[in-house]
Length: 178
Image 1 (cartoon, helix red, strand yellow):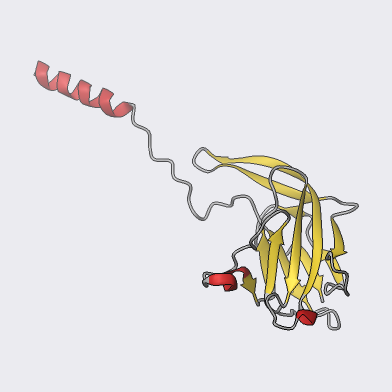
Image 2 (image 1 turned 30 degrees about the horizontal axis):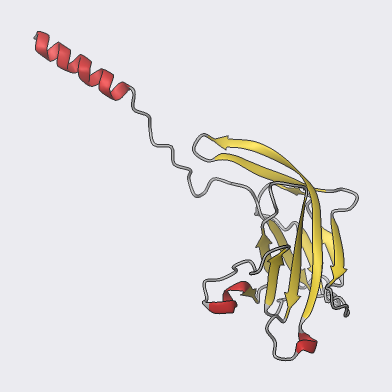
């Protein structure tokens, strides 16, 4: 009886120090990306697909990966919406957006630059997931839109901020009209 009691006591102490596995569920909201939708400038209520859009962050050599294709095609998108990350360290992120990237006719390739200005706030999600960053676009000057180094007509005609608080990716934050 004494041995059984000691065995149960030993068993209880052995497993009392174990912790449950902390695994961050894939469905847990983390730091949101900036969601941009593209619209027809002449018919503002109609979504419009971009053609071979390439988005490259400032100081980066390669673009954001939009699909799993091989080669340069993985950096291109032809949809009407994109999600791009903002820097969690700092208060601005700059991107060049190239329409018709890789086109053999250089006159059809057009590059615009957008710099997003914002503040950040870290929120504790859980022990397993850690922290996430939420962004608030600058209320007076949320972005700066310029033409590329080689000045030509901007392909982006108008930018509208729909949601200045970026807390999730379930809503459109920016609308671009072209």
